[in-house]
Image (cartoon, one colour):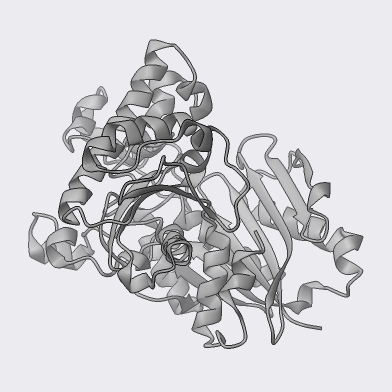
Length: 434
């Protein structure tokens, strides 16, 4: 029986999974699952076999699913209770490798096999991305218990930005303290940007090393990235994912002293939050900036579609703030790249699904020579092959593109590269499974 590979993407309140079968010729997608609103009751669950995608199952998860560990175990139960999956002879022991997306890799510059020492090093980084790294570590522990014969490998969002130059990643603080505490810009959403880069390269029929783009990963967590000749040269997130663009519950860039004036007792913002636990160490300041800010704080809702289509003043303000902040980064990166870019690329949940947001950004960026929006292409994505499609009118040098990014596929591609098995697996087979 060919081995199975499990790709795991743990978000702050979500979990996405994909199961692949590998053989000497290709990698085949077998099943996908996702759980959202983990921690709320009930979490939302979706599951599908690749052999019958039209029979996708959507339901509320049991109320016992309260944590990411619960969500992971629930997915495994559903998967191996599914006769459509097990009838082909698949069993838990056939899972040989588990590929984990981990947001913050610190000074790691490549994927690592997770053993006790690497686990401890990742745990030490959790203070820099407490809402994400802790979730990934929870799943890693669960894998050790539930799939003891499988090898876990961590793939880091921060690795893609290891090409940043010192004047980009260095903060104007004491170099001694910065080095001692590893305080610098790291950048995130790297697996998404790596997928975008490869997809745009294929779409434009140009090698990676000749691709220069401004990429926007816009979702409840949002960031921008300047890519020159296939390498990240700047990105909006910094030491932690909270910096840069505002998100669903993230403040984005604010005056650092704001937090001391935000609460009644500004001296207490550095203390552990009442919501902190032994596993989740988060200060009051981090809680406010990560979980109690963003467009939800401005509007009362995290539903950006509602915000983008509403006439309420608070909704319009939140929409305009995001457009303004995105365009500031686009303009700055345009100058940094000396105007020599192939495309402005939209990705992420909002980038892929909010035509209102894309239009507003492109209208503001028209002065840069970026393609103007085509209303028909922008409002309804036409049938297209692969993950990339045009939303511009055409006729300009700088194209307006959407890329349906997939971090689970990118994690799997990295895994294959890591094992130096690329001669057996084609990128086309990976790209086409989603």
